[in-house]
Length: 190
Image 1 (cartoon, rainbow, N blue to C red):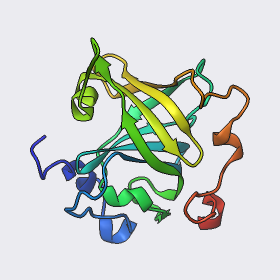
Image 2 (cartoon, one colour; image 1 turned 90 degrees about the vertical axis):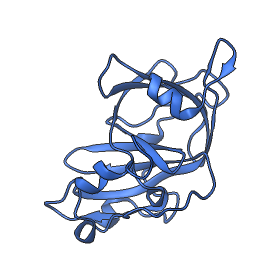
Image 3 (cartoon, helix red, strand yellow; image 1 turned 90 degrees about the horizontal axis):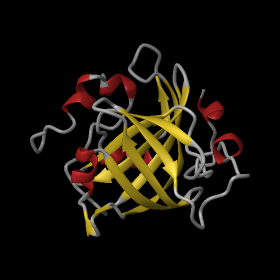
Image 4 (cartoon, rainbow, N blue to C red; image 1 turned 180 degrees about the horizontal axis):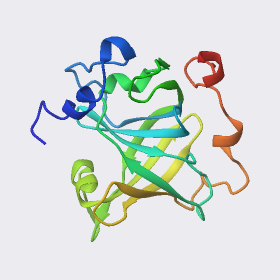
């Protein structure tokens, strides 16, 4: 997509004045940041967003991320979001796209570790080609993860790597429900 047009789909789907969501600035800021938002919309899901250049490339993860490497989580790629979404929490009003409450469930930095034949692959190229490997350094999640596209559509799989951040017993998406920024829950915003 042409530079400067990456957020067209995001803006087309929303009435930003009514929804209260960020319109998107022009600055880049620090690089390689991520956010996972707990979004109670028509169905509860978690939105995983990785900064790639001047946007957040985004996936909706219905069951939330898992720390168990045996779990394969569906991750549906959605439209790119503005960098301002790194700190967005709030209540999107009924009748608006994505209506419901959203909190910053986890945030931090990530490292792109995608490689092919031992050579690093740029994050934008990795997303384009349908396979991304990265390490998260967040407040709730850490360690390696991979996203792999299934076929030519928007469906991907999110898988935790079997490393020091793996934990087959811990279920943060079920037990840690508060925002890492404000301590609020989705219920607090309802």
